[in-house]
Image (cartoon, rainbow, N blue to C red; front, side, top):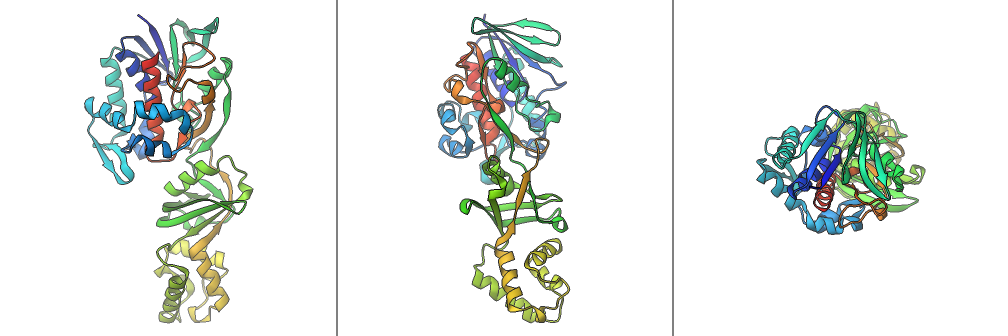
Length: 405
C-alpha cells in the first residue's frame, strides 16, 4: 500500500489527508501544534467562513493571484463540492450575505472537528506535536521526511504548512524552506487582507465603523479600485472588509504612488450633498460645527472630516465661508487618505506569494521538480479576496493533491 505523509493539519492538509486516504492509501498527517486547525479556529471571527456558494467562474474571478493555475481545480472541486463534503460529514451549513458559507452552529471548531472526523473515519493516522524539519529526496524523488524525532520514510509527501500570516497559529514559513531546499522558486511573500496605515491622524474616529461608503484608490493617477461596503477606523488608519480587499491589490505597489478617497455619502451627488449642508447650516446656524455635523457623521468622524476641510470645530455654522463649505463638501464626498504601510503578518488574514505555481502541475499539485512531492493551500502563490475564497483554495488544492498522490 502506498504510504503518504501530509505535513500540516490545517484546512488544506486535512482535506488532502482525507482525499488520499479515501483512495486507499496509508496516510499519516504530521502537525507540529498540539491541536489541528489552529488557524481555522480564528477565521470569520471564530465562525469560519469556509467557502462561498458561487460558481467555479465566480470563484476564479475572486482570485487575486493564481486564477489560471486554479482553473482546472476549480471545476474538479468547486465550492459546491466543499459544501457537499461538510454536509455529508454531518455539519449543517448556511449561506449569508455575499454568498458566504458558515456552519449553522457559528462555531469554527465544528469545521475542524468535521475534517478530523472525516480523516479518522477514512483511516488517517494523526500525529500531533510532531515537527517536520526537512525532506529526504533521492534521485529526484521524495522518499521521506525528517522530524524532530527521526526519519519517516514514505512514497509521497504533501506540504500543507500554510504561509506566514498569524504566526501564533504555527504559520512560520516552514513550507517555503522545504520548497527552496527541493529546488523550487518561492515568489516573495507579502501580507494580504490586512489593515492600512495612514499618514493622516484618524485616531479620533478609532472604533467607528462606516457602512455603505465607497472607497476608491488610484495609483499614479490611474483608478485601480472603487467599491462600496464597510470600513473601520483604527488607531493606525483603516481596516474592515473594504480595506482588506484593497490591500490585496496594493500589497506589491509602491504606496507612495497610491492615493485613497472615501465617499461617506455615495447616495448623494455633489449637488445634493451641498444642498443638505446648506439646509443643516441654515437650520442650526448658531450652533458650532462639531454639533451641526453630527447629523451627518458620528462625533469622532466629524473631527476627522472638519480637520481635513480645515474648518474649526468651534466655528458657528453661520460663519462658515463658501470656500470652507466647498472643502467640507470634498471631504465628505472624497476624503483624501494617504497609505504609508500595510499591517504585518501578525494581523494579515493570508499571505500573498509562495511556491511558484509554474513549477507545480495544476492537474495534480505535484512538483515538476521532485517526483512524489505535492503542495497545497496557502503555501502556494495563490490568494483571493475575502468571502470564503481563500479557504476554498485550500480545500480545492488539498483535494487535488490527495487524490493524485
